[in-house]
Image (cartoon, rainbow, N blue to C red; front, side, top):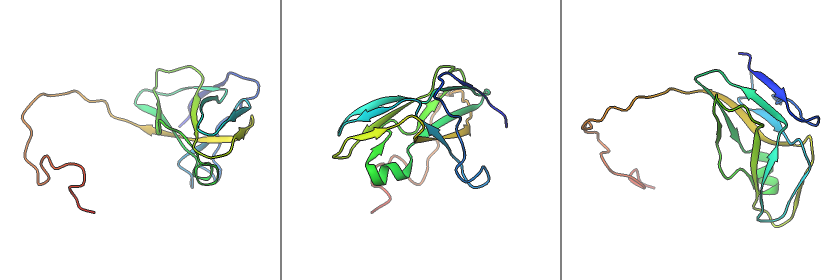
Length: 143
């Protein structure tokens, strides 16, 4: 599948598969600017790219496991959704849960981008069929 992409900043890098498309579901997204995140700070980090998704597809932005484990950086709205109608710059909301400031530099891998198909639905108001679970919710399946 080919998706149109545009660099909107000189310092932007295109998303890449670290191990290739046959082994990775997600592509690395790169910071386009330097950003210093203080402990407890949340910041919007530009990637310098915008994309044109076809109808029926979304782009999901997810945290990088290495940044979460080693530096306590994560994305508080994960997974974030980029809708097919959005043409603005992709920006990533990053939060520093660590005890030390974290310096993001232009060109650093800050998140993963996954392209996913989705279905649109039409609601039909009706009585619902019974199920084994019924209305049992949180903790209903045990420990």
